[in-house]
Length: 228
Image 1 (cartoon, helix red, strand yellow):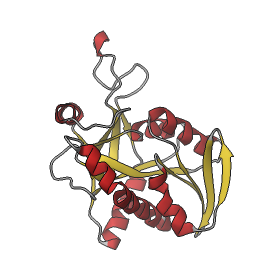
Image 2 (image 1 turned 90 degrees about the vertical axis):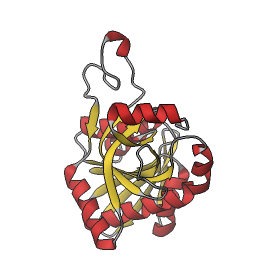
Image 3 (image 1 turned 120 degrees about the horizontal axis):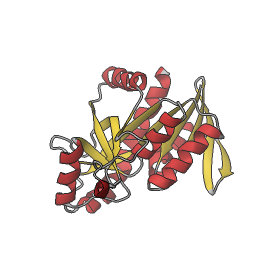
């Protein structure tokens, strides 16, 4: 099976490349794609660069050019709800673009004509993730993840996103990746490890815990490949 694994930053895919060791690099569209064999699978690994536009471009390329059959997203996120701690793993049941705003025309936040507010992830991949978590004894949470082109480090904004969408975590790429996958009929899974609490001083927690949280997420995604 051809499996795409996408992160937003180098730190989010480096743990995978270190484990795999042997891979081919392909330069395309001002980005690098890493091709590797793993068990019975062909992996295409990339980091998109931060933000919805970059992740949309990379997800589309992974599917259209490299012919990925499923897409697994690995990375970090900020916690919106109480009970989520730094290092916790959460996968998205649904994703929403919290900064998509045409409310001036009477539409709800996150909606534009032709799209639903929420993008769904693949139920089968979500079930596999829960099986993997149970097998290796890792706590895995689920919930709605909100995506926007902004690093959230403000208590008022954090509360607005959480309360408007019942979102558990926020980040900057997941909803756009899920939108691409749904449009192109490719199963999608979005996993995040909590790196900060998305409130005051979140930027300091992010810098401190980025690498450890990203490694935790990447290792789990590779465990999922064992089950596919």
